[in-house]
Amino acid sequence: MAILEVKDLKKSFGDSDVLKGISFSLEEKNVLAIIGSSGSGKTTLLRCINMLETADSGSITVDGGVVFDSDRTEKLTAEQKRENQLKIGLVFQSFNLFPQHTALENVTLAAKIHAKNRPDFKQNRKAILAEIEENGKALLKKVGLSDKMNNYPCELSGGQQQRVSIARAMALKPKILFFDEPTSALDPELTGEILKVIKDLAAEKMTMVIVTHEMNFAREAADRIIFMDNGVIEEEGTPEEVFDNPKSERTREFIAGYSD
Image (tube, rainbow, N blue to C red):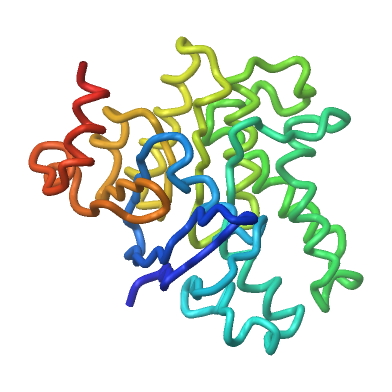
């Protein structure tokens, strides 16, 4: 069974149809790269899956739990919605770190807030918070920032801030990690360090969906590729199928543009 299922997702802004019936699935431990020109609907798709935007119709299921269903969403309780949305982690383009908090505090803040909903929180408060702190430190170590835990965002480079963002997205132990153009806000020399972190996560079989303009990275890191164009999935397949033997003329034009 697929860990992510998106069925006939549609989204419009005014008279503009941005998503025109998107359907795809993703198996656990796989990496999906979504490519396409600006304005093709890639970011809107990610925002709908992460519930930063509400789709007009269709359904989104993560690990068997309904995140969105235009026929059923209103019947879900607030607790069910929250539980299903916590299965998803998102790394933004522009870091979105809290400037008044250290790297470690940024990573652990959401986990500490959610821990208060645990029925045993009052009884085991110290142990639970200590466990969250240790997990935060382990995540920062994983992304190569064990020596920057007490630094504030203004004291970190763009690449370091993005690595904190990745650690923060992983702190709630999501089933799927989403990346929206994770290198777009970085200088070219900093891009490599972020792509290395993502490749390391892929090697550890973290399930991921990555919107990217880095074609070589998509080819190397992804198990599946989706090429979006004008609000639809124009082509989907393995990296070899999409990059080396595309069926669609529009896909061929897009790939050729990055090869020039």
